[in-house]
Picture 1 (spheres, rainbow, N blue to C red):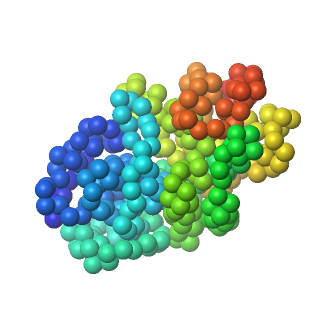
Picture 2: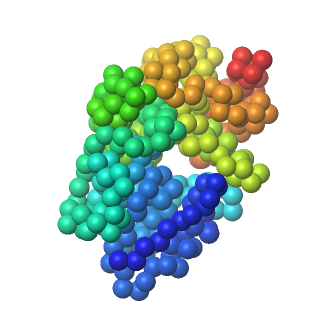
Length: 335
């Protein structure tokens, strides 16, 4: 067993050329399996490298912070731009928080014996901010699914109704138990990880991130790229997704008079989404997490350019109402 540890001090780890290059550089010629121990960035980085080198990998999830553990995409940063190339699926997912200060080598041996495992336990030692990130990512599925419906009705895109049902059921279970996330209740954290895992499964089933990612993710990516370009540490992706979700809900409210029939019914009022975020102890406003007024307004105007994917932002632009709505929402949130 060869160990590779990333120590970034007070800075965050970014899945960019430097990180990916070091993983590849440290990979010996006789490597048969790579085990990623961490959360989003570690998972995506090892997933991407192993997909290019033809090796299997296992992810030991140390936080219920995002939905990409079992998805086949790997969001990475190249030349300061974040995109999600297709990678491959993990051979196994382990989420076990009974291990608090266990010896790393013993953990490796346990993983190798398990071969394939999905374990959803309490994740009770996870940091509060990572729980907020995971929960925010789950809340973001509300507008992601609505965007998917809009893309079908307004742009003729394909949708898998089975995947939508899968995601909705996972969300309902997570939201029912969200209050317990504040106290790290084992059942609540298990429902959170289950929701994140099942939405990852849905993405893998259709080979796109549509079941889990819409315009709310575009805003998060826009903010993250801006922070990285300025040499700053961005907020956790899921926390940004969470606060972006009621913002996108506001777009649906403002466009209700011209939306395709039935589309807006899938998205609850933004006040209800904010209440859901508060229920799980997550931030509810971009202002609350330090997104400046200028960056916020710019993201509303240009967020649709982050990915070539039809969303409510593109719909608003096509109908000539993007700037008007962006101005109104910015004023309502920032004053």
